[in-house]
Every structure is written in structure tokens, then in C-alpha cells.
Amino acid sequence: MGGSAVVVGAGIGGLAAAIGLRLAGWEVTVAERAPVLADVGAGISLHANGLRALDALGVGAAVRAAARPQYTGGTRVPDGSWLARMDGAALERELGTPIVGIPRAVLHQLLRAALPPECLVVGAEVTTVDRSDPRRVRVPLGNTAGNTAAKAAGSTAGNTLGSTVANTVLEADLVVAADGVGSRLRAQLFPGHPGPAYSGSTVLRAITERPVDLATDFELTWGRGAEFGHIAFADGRAEWHAVLNSPPGVRHADALEALRRRFGDWHDPIPRLLTATRPEAVLHHDIHELVTPLPAFAAGRVVLLGDAAHAMTPNLGQGACQALEDAAVLAAALAAGPTVESALARYDAERRPRSQSVARAARQAGRMGQRLAHPLAVAVRNTALRLAPSRATVRTILRHADWTPPALS
Image (cartoon, rainbow, N blue to C red; front, side):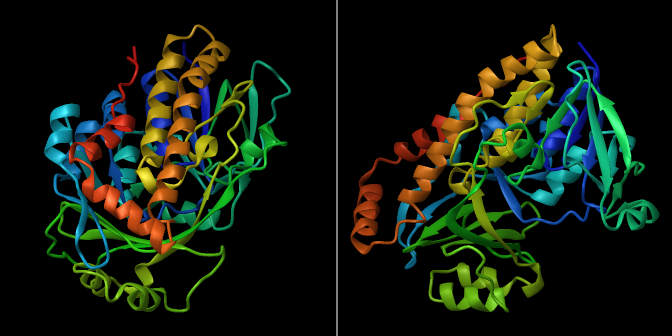
């Protein structure tokens, strides 16, 4: 089965969905509201399930070649003592791959490279879809600010962009809503749903300006109501993130200086990571999630994918991996057919229970990890982690990472 599809959103999930749909024989247009793809963002860890989804989409080898395996690391406390060690070699024996770390910008570039430039439309905002015809979906493309500049630029940061066709209406057999945690299309499809909720945590993150000498590939450090972590990259630089319990909307005139005050007395290499970072490189976002599960991931010929369907907290490192799973399953379902409706029903049946289960587990992991602030509760958790066998960490990761994508015929 083939047809025409519009993917709304050129994030990781949207690009992966477009790759999968093309492999399944579909004509695809990706509509991205940003007028210029600036390749911003910090870093990401990809577990075995995300890598397997990328393999099914034909881009796994390229991603592995650009990533750094995570063999060493674990979880610590602010004085540097260990709570639990990560055994990347054991994960590799179990799953055929370790976890890998890669800059988000590099992952975006690799996904875009698997698509013809003409299928990507920038500066095109989709706020609604017309589902009045059960056989076709009409997608109005609005014009976002800066569209003219995007046309003139043609490319940025190595990106070859497709033509901009905003202020037109596309007709498609399928619309994939990959428009993020604040998805407007989700709100249109499920107007009674409360939408995303603030998790209680805010995250500041950046990539170091220069390489940093690190003893481990990946670390998390838990304090009271705070977490600091890093991911080492293949080029020697590192991504770091700081997650804090905080009211929403709190911002700092100098975010990097605020972090130095908060984490300056935590163990090495945390101060060195902050020193190796330019102040303007720090990104700050409040973390929102879909606490109320959606009743369905599809309505008619519109299907939700990634954060639009199941935005979750980052505590398990599964957000992007679940979006990649979505893309692989959606492509396989549409390739098998026999109708769009039956394919989307299969997608919903496979993806909704699993992704919502992972989202619940991520929320619980945050409550027992970074969000825990009471001194007695923190002490009990730390003691339990120190006493747990090393195999327990591997089992925790396997619970969510041991997933196999369906065959994409």
C-alpha cells in the first residue's frame, strides 16, 4: 500500500517517520514551522531499541559510526562516591549493542541526509487539518515569520532545504502529527484532553565548546532535588545537563553562573564541564509530559507520533527511542496494509500500550531519582542502590531497551 503523506514536524520522530514511509512506498512531504534549520540542541543517548528502529529504517549504521558507545559510567552522589555502576559490555552481550551518545544536531543531519531535499518544507506552520473527507486529509500550510529569509538562504549549516510552499493547501492520504509536546494537532483531535502538564522539573543543558578529558562515557549524579549528568561524544566534547526541582518559568540572567553556584562544590568533572561551556550555549527548558494518557494515537487518517503522542520525562532516556519505535512500527503497518485505517489501528494497538507504559516508568524513575528531596528518603534510596547487585542496573535498562521492530516489507 502506498499513497501521499504529510508529516508535521521535522524533529527526530518526524524525520524518522518520513524515512519509514518512503521505504514503504509513500510520497512524503515534511512540513516544518521553523524558517531555518539551525541544528541546535544538546546531546542524546540511544538505547538498543532506538538503534534497532534506526536499523529498520536503514540509517542505523550511519548513526553508530557518528556516535560514541557508552561502556563506562553510572550513578554517583555529589561527593563523587558511586551508587551504581553501568556495565556497557554486559548490555552489549545481552542486546548486541551498548548505549551510544550522539549530538542531537548530528542525528538530525543524518536523518535528513536519508531524505531527498525536496520533501522538506520549511517555514510552513500547520495548526489544523481538514478531515471532512474520510478518504483524504486537507492540510493548510501557514506562513511562519522568516519564511522569505529561509527561501533566500537555501541552505544553512550544511542543510539543503526543499522549496517553501507555505500559504497553500496540501491533500494527503495520511497526516503524521509529529509536532511535539505542545502539539496543536493533538489538541484538535482530542479537544477534551488536558494536554501536557509541568513535571515539576526544569533542565539546563549544553555541549562543551572544546574536548574535555573524562574518565567515563556517561554519568548521572543525584543530589537533593537535583541531577547533573554528562554524555561523552566521539569528538571529545561532552553534553551535560542539570535537572532541578523548580517552579515553572524561572529563568536566570546568567544561567551558567547560576549553575556554578549550584553545582560548584560537586565532584569532578562537573566544574570542568561548566568551565568548558560558553554561556550562550546553555539551553533552558521546563519539562512537560502527558500525564493523562491519550485514548488513541489515531483519528481517521491522522496519526500521532513521538512527543505529540506520549511526551515523557527524560529520566529513562527513552523519549527519542520511543519516537523512533513509533516511526518503524508505523512504516511496517502501512507497508502491510491493506488500508490506511487498518494500518493505523495496528499502529495504535502496538504503540500505545508500550509507550504509555514507558512514560509511567520514566515518571516513577524521576520520583525516585532526581526529584527526591527529603534527606531521609534520599538516604534510604542511596543505601538501597549501593546494596543492589550490579546486575540490577542491567535488568532495569533491559526492561525497556529489549525491543525488536516489525519487519518492514
